[in-house]
Length: 300
Ligand SMILES: [Zn+2]
Image 1 (cartoon, rainbow, N blue to C red):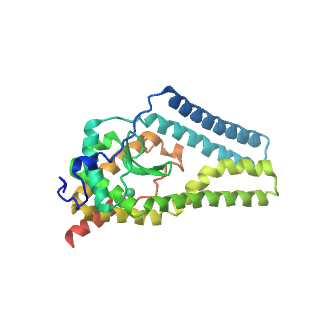
Image 2 (cartoon, protein in one colour):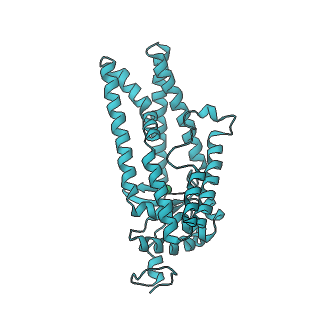
Image 3 (cartoon, rainbow, N blue to C red):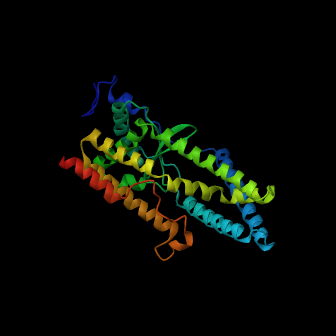
């Protein structure tokens, strides 16, 4: 039926399946670039205005600690966002990489009976992962990750991502971020009431602490996400029958993530300047734990 060693009995040959994988292309028109620049400029202007207003409140001695801390957190956030942007590369068109990814991805999705996600090959802060764009899942893959993997470990990491898709983890993640936003909005109402309904003060504090509050929420509700990660490791390794390839793939992912974190936050001597943003995220279990669980499957 098809050319894949572990393929199912789906109709059509491998050529038809390969054609199902769509790739992002760099927008060639100047209009798309202008829109992106405009969006970026508006975003940074809003941040600059909020920071300036907070500094004014500190100078006028109105809740100086709350506004001072909020301003520092936001300045740190903007610096990190600029570094993230500098690190990110353009969308790449790489026929060789596409010919490696397409057959593996379409085969895995056919076996898991889920829709094939769009693929974007570009350097971001994640070596490989699923994001949601315009309600559609997009698989982000960094060229550094592609260069570091052999086909078996690439297949393993793609199997991990497909396991997320078929388990419905994308909608779980979406609900989680909706809760985070809702919780932060409720916190804003509490601030508004506690401060005796001084709307200007409460509103500015709310805008200032919006992103830190969401980060805080996500940090303390990571256990469910970590369980989903372990499940995706196991399901991916089981689908391939190759836990060693999954271990190799994870080692590459964690190695690249460590390098990214170092260029974002500086070495250990400088990390404190980005605290608390530089804290290790708790959305993924430690590498040693993931490897130990996978090794267990080879011995049982
Ligand atoms: Zn994952």
